[in-house]
Length: 95
Image 1 (cartoon, rainbow, N blue to C red):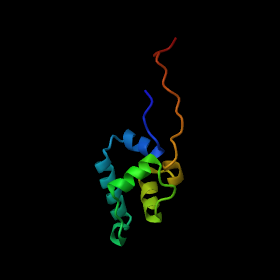
Image 2 (tube, rainbow, N blue to C red; image 1 turned 90 degrees about the vertical axis):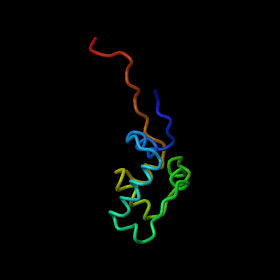
Image 3 (cartoon, one colour; image 1 turned 30 degrees about the vertical axis):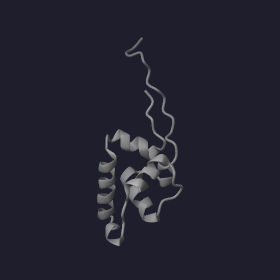
Image 4 (cartoon, rainbow, N blue to C red; image 1 turned 90 degrees about the horizontal axis):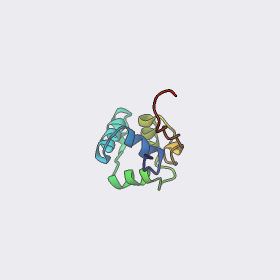
């Protein structure tokens, strides 16, 4: 079955089996680890929802650093549609 995702970010969150709240907590922890939290990093649920939906072209630079560090992809890729993956074959085993 094809995953219902708007962005690569949504697909990666789904693959990690994280809830929205868990993902935000992970990103906040990453911000602390990068020393960004002390400089006013705050991520709201609404902001995260806009990222997952691809409704933001370029987040704040600090947010970009956090997203790229956590997910290992450029922000441009994370906020774009996920790459098309071939659906697995329904048949199994050698023929």
